[in-house]
Length: 158
Image (cartoon, rainbow, N blue to C red; front, side, top):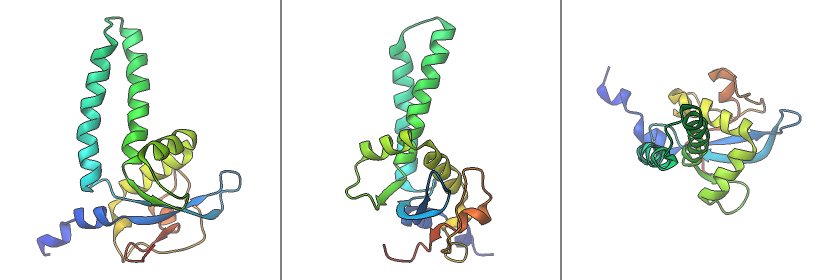
């Protein structure tokens, strides 16, 4: 096996188009997002920055009360999770994309945040031989086979 077959960064940086399910019916809609993989340069940079922000915000809490510190940590980490997942979204069908809008979208549609987290954790879904289009909806706890069904091939133009 050639060492290049282990390389994932380029595919993660290219991203894939992921169709979004209707929150009421679970059926795929015409709405979509293009997401990068977790091995992308953007995500890795955001991961580093996020750790720094979490540390700074926890220090700023300035309490030694363990209960208060735990509550603050949970809140800070939950928000940083949305920021990190938003860094994976490079395009969407909702018009102009800003980081703030992507974070708000994921905060208000946590099922989409879960879907992105699960999908982007499976690096095999970013390879042409695996990604395909279909009309079946992935659920936040779906298997990688089910997740493939809501994806356009990464080589397909948007």
